Length: 304
Image (cartoon, rainbow, N blue to C red; front, top):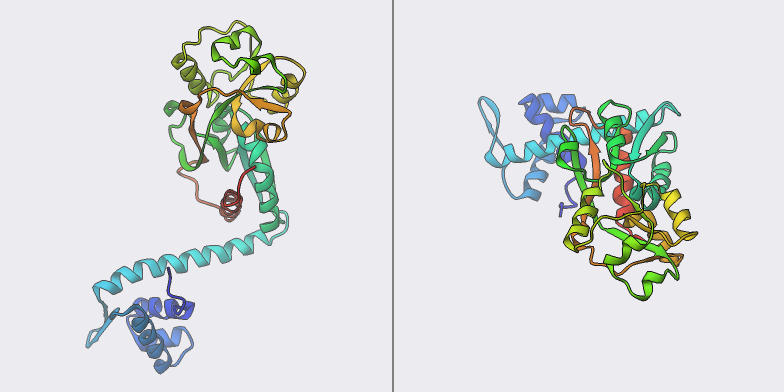
């Protein structure tokens, strides 16, 4: 935990003394007297419990502890400056747009709360949300049409040239309407008796679904509709006996209210990471950093 006695003025004075290599010049740059800046440095060294600078005829040099502290002190000042620049940019008034891609499970479960949190933090920024399958969104990200994508980690071949920051893990579920006949005798081998809404080629969860079916000895499914559309899946499953194979987040609210039911199948091997995806050559924008803050805030709350 950071010692609360350390103030911004301590950091600023220390960094400026090192940059100027002179107490006198640092004091002039900060519009302080030399005794005042000397007192501030002494306070900092007493709080930390060691000498940070050595004063000699050649001027000022860093101790080993001072070298370490300088590294993080400069990072802190740079981060603060970036924050100030971000506030200024965000305040330009409707001229900033953040384009975010959201995979289906995130679009349904996480994005509504994130969008609300983001709009409170940066009301002047236009948040443009595009949902769709993994391959489609990653292609838009690569071509600069999206600033970031949030969703499941894809297969290695689809993630080349993409930076991934994990947020949490998610499972794939087998979901049916309330009262479905399979609920009386839940057996994964029987899913072929009904139409199955199956993730298409290129979707992030397709390999996981294929893996769990193989692990349980389930053969070819004769009647399939390939889709990861949350809107289609919710409505089709409610009006039929179809079985929907989809990420937890897509149907989480319907499962919670009882309109859809999770089949009690072993889905442990379908667990996969959900995270933020960006281009490694892109610099984080102030709006992008605020979006990450909104995501972290929402994830700190219990998900329904």
